[in-house]
Amino acid sequence: MTQRSYANPDQSLSPATPFDMGSGFVNATAALNPGLIFDTSFEDYMSFLCGINGSVPVVFNYTGLSCSAYNETISGFDLNLPSITVSRLNGTQIFQRSMRNIGGNETYNVGWNPPYGVSMKVSPTQFSIAMGETQVLSVTLNATKNSSSSSFGRIGLFGSTGHIVNIHVSVIAKIASS
Image: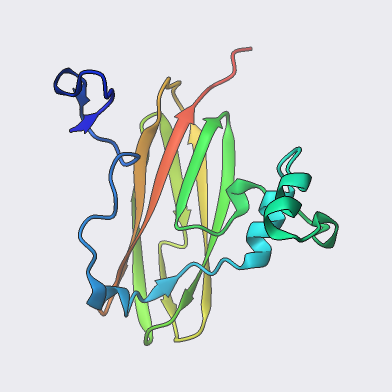
């Protein structure tokens, strides 16, 4: 349960969603050997921040760096994070996530549970990856039903040597009426 209001906490509890939950208890040993990582650089974050309308002076104020050095900007959808969030999915949208193997050679099976009102396809559904190699995962989301609040899904990558990688997916589906 989660608390929605501080005015009367005993009466404002509701079921928790992934937005309310942390990662749980940190397993420091597992964190030392994650298997796959999602590389995202300082330059990626700068390209993202500089692409936000009206953010150029704010970025300069906080970083001292000019956005003119970042000619190509990227959207939040394209930031290589281990999650996918879509605040308004209308039709079909394709996302890619790039993962680098920092463990030993491993084969991963991919499974998923789509959010409510969304069909989801992930490819490849299985891949083998050697240490140091990179694998791109393509995720296709298609709105099938309207929703007024976020619904949640998950992509699970299950490695042959025991690594488990989760990509959380949150979507609000809005199908345009014609």
